[in-house]
Length: 474
Image (cartoon, rainbow, N blue to C red; front, side):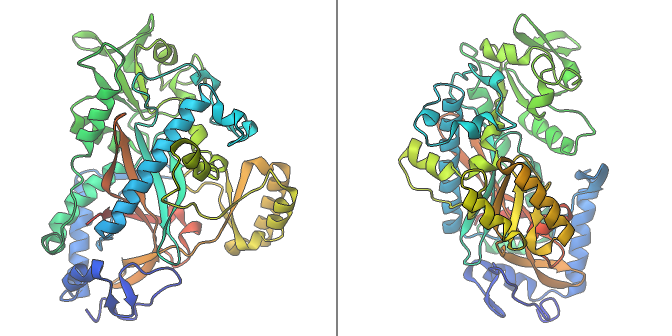
């Protein structure tokens, strides 16, 4: 309607609602028709109801150590079924290739011998753990859960921004966002065939049970959390409750003779599968950080002995390395004999060719610079937004350690209408679909987590100031 979309401007990126000013794309026609009769005051009231519902349910996240209600934008993002199908098959393809890579790199190492990936890329990765060598899950799954971050470029093409196959988080917000949105904007759900997301806990439990050690037919599954102070504790508790399994901390587990058990009021009970939400370095003080009090000593030995399955597997982080990311298209061709369905963002490797390094160093103010072992936007420098001092500092760091950085072209991310004050404004977004691998199939949740950059600057520069919104396939 006029006041909501007053002065709505198409931004520099692909606008997902409008192909032309005031002309919604077919995917968004039902949502546009729903918003048209609403005044800004009416939409604001619905937004307040949505925020209050999240606050009352304790749906929170931690930012810089402060617990906050989870922000959810009132305007849903919609992706057409045929577009989502491309995302589904592309994400599944990527996970299958990374599974094969992890099995290979912690096993025979044929991909290294064949020179598809240089050996130095693997052995210098901060997340390659030799301690994981020889741990062979019986159903071959190391990536039980994955979150693949995508963006849409200036032409609306989905591209992979990065892979998350260690302990990806955020799926609980997708589930809760969808439930809340169905109540505050029921018109959209009535007019559009929205795919459900409430089957995720069942899919995850099925995958975890399928990963149980050999000979275990009724496995005991637990969710291992660092505790209530972790920023994703709400998600840990929700998934445990929805799956009907125990939520445990490291102090609740004991490992003796390569057998893992949890302490209960009825005594110790054997544990067969641990869905851990603890980073590798804190998981087992015998093999990693000896000062960790949130893990359990002996877990890795029990996994190597085939007495317990750790999901996701220890050592998966080597596949998250942003330098390894540049080789994933080659891994898809090598292992699957297929062409990549979802392209990467154009990326420069800085440690191979001195000419490439010098080319990047001469264009720092035009590129996005990323540390290869960073996550959640940490350490990223956006050249066009950086000061001379910041560019000089990142230049020194890149020259000192080219292996530790990649450079990418600055993409104008796609934009969606977002409620800013009492008007709808175009804002940049990304997308994290979630995949579950049970050893037979890679299932992709028909919806994902979108982060919205609230300022008008590109999302690259404002990850910590992003709001979340649910993203349906339809």
